[in-house]
Image 1 (cartoon, helix red, strand yellow):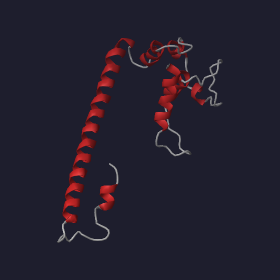
Image 2 (cartoon, one colour; image 1 turned 90 degrees about the vertical axis):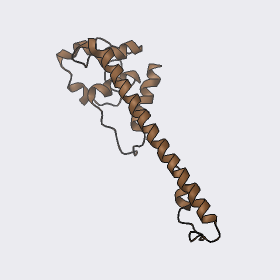
Image 3 (cartoon, one colour; image 1 turned 90 degrees about the horizontal axis):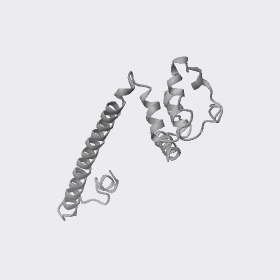
Image 4 (cartoon, one colour; image 1 turned 120 degrees about the vertical axis):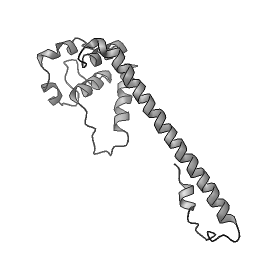
Length: 152
């Protein structure tokens, strides 16, 4: 499950990018996702031959290195908690992050729903007006036909 989640995260981060584009990730985040997706070799090197991310590791990162292999969500949480000033803040911090992401998602959903509804109303009115025999909008290629045919 962890490996699948790591792969899904990579795919989600790459969504919408052109083939020659690459998403910029911080080295710790990239290392975490690599370890989740099992793209890290047994000796700790990345299977892509990229070692620059490992150069920034210092001795104070020993706490983060205690999790040698990611086998559970608890291991992921330990690594994430190690990035906070105090690990005890992790549950509240990540819960607040999830709440904020959920709130943003709901706001975006509401906004897109309003746009879709307004477009449907506009297209309905346009079709009604353009179907009237005396309508100035009644032409071989109605002005709004392309707009109303496209999806939101």
